Length: 346
Image (tube, rainbow, N blue to C red; front, side, top):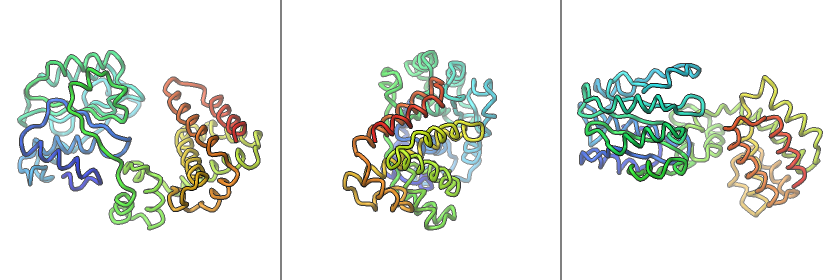
């Protein structure tokens, strides 16, 4: 049921209305930041449409259609061939196309096209979700466009993406768009505390670090995060206070060794959150607005020595580095350049 999903109440109203009026579009584009529940909403919309005992225009959550459509067994992340097909739930009329690594293959979209042309097995319609649709390559995008141009009468295709501008304009123009907002910090904090047994301190820190993403908040291991943050706080101190390039290069080496390289992007996120907090204080923002409240004293001290323009430039450099990860850059060289550049701009 939509009521079980945290946040975006205005979207819930829209989707309930579509179901009640039997006006679910053939193609729907759900856009918004990562981890705010777009896929959950898409699945819930499909469940509500095929539910055998709807309650107030949404899924009952108990009937056979509801329980089976929500039951997915996702393939092994390393099984490339499995991601070349639609991954069906236990209900034969609800399926997902998911990216393998960083790409959605044309084979998966062609399989979707084939399946979409079959009449429903049990429900009145079939539902296909393309998760992270911006990861389609050009052949996949063109194959999907063909299906959207001539949509089967009994199939619905829902695309989710945090980067709608990466999709072909012709794909966007053929979809009805629903935009999702970040979930409020208060709503996330309350959910973590009341439903997932987070302590007050853990819930508060996780909610503030989530940037409106319930998925990010739920998946945060607070203990491990604090360990990563201590390391990134040393990076920030070395860049702003000591301007110690030797120490920064040692840290870069450590971030890219065999033990830590799989957490490279998480470390970047952590560093970026610290830089943003210091920047916020440096331009006169109230300390209560920072995310890393439990290390506020250290961040306030660093803000006294930091240049707001340099901090802003560091954030841009991290964003650029993150974008370049998709083209398999040398992470060690990239992080060396980032850290040395930080001392030059401090």
